[in-house]
Image 1 (cartoon, rainbow, N blue to C red):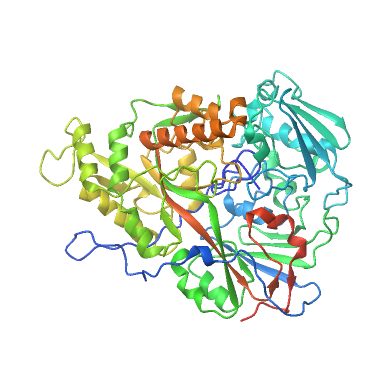
Image 2: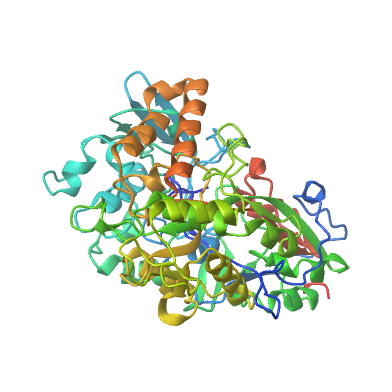
Length: 605
């Protein structure tokens, strides 16, 4: 569960775990005469995603212990920031899922249940929440989990020297958080320790988001006994406690870390649900181009993700079970229309920015032939997105929204209307002043087909008269890409990326004035009001909240500062020696990793 982020990451944690994701684009081609054709030559057989199972039912006698081998599918090293309060990389999040410090478990609607490490009690009338540790829970070093460990992550995120992305509008909903962050108070007045196992938090307002770990509620504990002596500024993120030997609450604990390449975890004997049946978990970075062969040859038991354009390579394998589920993520095209003010921790919208023309942005969206890319390369595993809310959030997703269908004629009309016209007859439009006009696009390097699909979209835009050039002249490595986007690199006018939403559908952590994850930097009074309405006290009425979500989705579609491009079905290949592995969101698999068993000493080939 997470919030913030992931990218892909990421994030659940409380507000979203907004973890940034890999865009994972696929191939695209043109015909020899330069005219646009359907992209690529991929097989058009569509996958019936409704038939993909969510759990493995492998038979066979189990062995005692053993090592679970996990492929972390990425074309870039992981950063190795193993702290829920500090990480920003979806790949670090994938690793931490096996060691998670999550306090709460959720049901199929992503709402907190009473089955986790902690129990949540909400007093909506008095705008308070009580969090109570259930039973005698211990950290992986044997120290008891206490109320101080529930409070400490708030002190990290709210600290005046905190430079992470999770101090945002949502976090400031906690009474006293802003005063603490501004150095006007030594503690967060709205957080009080009741006894050794429980704390009370007072909020400025309480909305339905709190039941999905929102409203500023944080979903993780932090080991104060390990971290409190380490200064938050610079030292904490570089410390051994974060990078080499984090203390955890999850089924497994860190044993060996090879920076950016691999992690070895061992069973946590103090895990509150019982010591895992598997002795070790080894997680290794595997390039997306190699993962199909690696699973086929029995090198790994589980792949954290799988490129959809390699789905056919898995279909007939006798040693692999293919699991699938709707992904809590969407791909998108974002436009830079402002800057992030780091000192004041807020987004500043620039009305005079190059991309602040709604007709231009809408035209770019209509010019993209997303439908053909989806049909030819994703085989039904990805489809054109119409909203910034994934369909898995059924209560809030609006399937009636049109979004941006491929319509090059409409794109041309909008560009004409906006004053972008081809004055010299070379096929490329000039700007409103008749000057040469080009748009700089940042896109991620990833699978071997990413470059081709980006080139296909560039041809789409050229067909309507727009010259789109690549920032740096080529696709950008994952970590460098997000560093540039986050820093508002002046060489980026628009960018292709993806968000992992986490289990909280509230968009405040991604699109509010104080959200550092608001990478487009778009801010307006109307937008702020809409976000407030979604997470308001009135939103305790399900109908009111559903309508508030609808209003926000329509507004964002019209403004087009962030255009959703693809919804995804997540493919998870699992070796048939693995038993008791389930990816159903309703079953909170990652809190039940202690049940996984193996039927052979090595993955089946």
